[in-house]
Amino acid sequence: MRRLLLAASATIALTAAAAAQDRSSVTGPALNRIIDEGANHSQVMVTAEYMDDVIGPRLTNSPAMRRAEEWTQGKFREWGLVNVHREGFPFGRGWTIERSSVRMTAPRPIQLTAIPIAWTPGTSGPVSGSVIVAPIARERDFARWHGRLTGKIVMVSLPGTGDEPGTPAFRRLAADDLQRLDQFTPARYDPEAADRRLARLDFAKKLDAFLKAEGALAYATQSGRDGKLVSGEGYLFGAGDTQVVPGVQIAAEDYRRLARLAKIGQAPTVEIDTQVRFDDSDAQAYNIIAEIRGTDPSAGYVMAGAHLDSWVAGDGAADNGAGSAMVMEAARILAATGQRPRRTIRFALWAGEEQGLLGSLAYVESHLATRGGAATATGLQRFYGWSNRWPITVRPEHAQLAAYFNIDNGSGRLRGLYAENNPAVVPIFRDWLAPFASMGASTVVMRPTGGTDHVFMQAVGIPGFQFIQDPLDYDSRIHHSSIDTFDHLKADDMRQGSIVLASVLLQAANAAQALPRSPVPTRPVVTDPFAYGGEDE
Image 1 (cartoon, one colour):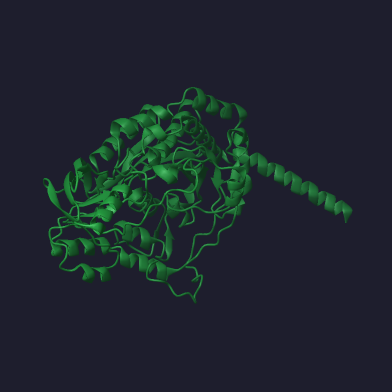
Image 2: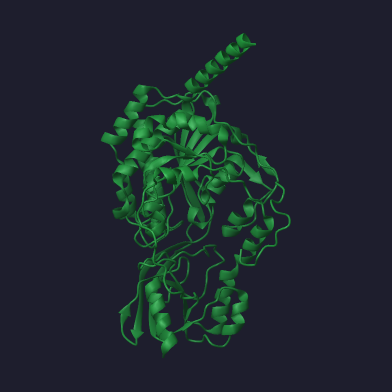
């Protein structure tokens, strides 16, 4: 028995060593060339600066986004990548802000911090009226305000009293923060909750129709954060969805001042002058694709991506110019160092992420898999409804995509990878990241992440992963805000991120075996069949 145990132990050790050798698929010289190129010859900040300062915010289908589509393709070609092209998918209208001014004119003049809500119409010259605080969050609220809004600027958000942060706005992840991320998070399947969310998506259209019928001049919402930050998020971008009543988002401090004045006496008067432009020249949005061709055509491909689109209040620097610049820089590093990977490495810059991951979803349906037959929903209806459509039908290319890696959490240092509840990849990722422990990027945690472009790849059984990043002030101040500019990007972090991404991609491309996959999902049972859902979900 002892001899059998020793023999079995030796076999296990040899198998583990062989597996480790297979996983460590990038040689020392190749790794050192990647580090040298990314550290000493980096272009990542030059790329980011042009994207942010010269092109600026990249709302999907806007003129600036069209410039970004052409410019990024040109850079990929300049760096020697191949099969550089754009892939279109149905989207809707382009929209851009020409000029905007929102002022309180009485009881005293104040220039307010505000921005037009995306895809709302302009005012066609200044409009002026007294404000009315009329919180409207559900259709049942319409009756309360019927007959009271004519000639008013309607403040539809409940003002609140302030949301000053109780923790530091800027932070990096400590060891215990990373440890807390390492947990298996069971999936929950609740199709009734998804149906309730879908039912609420047309509320913006119903609110617009109500305000128009009531004779409102314009409406205003409150920004979601203090600090004079605005975002201007709006979602009625479809060709037939454009609102009639102009809308603006006002900074929280200014909004609450207007609300206080309206509460204690005569309502203040506000003047709104917004000039916006719609562009219907092309209703298609476009993903940008480029490749470093692999040496083995039968080995499939690996992929990295980030979304190129942004909101318009800032320049889209951290969200997600930073991720786009790091993906582009990883491509440049691999091309500049002459890497010849076994698998093709494909790079994607997605459009329409901010409107429901629509670019990456279009790629999934075109290349990888469909769900529940032909899709008819658009916009956020498409986003919320897609994961509850069954069955999943894989396309031939599904088996060819060995791994997808996404960056979309600002410019913070990469700290490792989320394993997305796939325990089989954990030891592999730890091997791949081991050379970067001194750079802070060696952590692998089990938990899944959501809200960005790997989600729908995971949803059809593709090994899709997001990087762990230091948060910095991304969520507290920068994300979707008017200060999302180049000034807040961290150059050392972005150089490190580009190096780590380039190495991980090369490891995945050269590995003898593709990453272990989770099964292609089938319709799950309802997680809690006894739960009663609330209407506010």
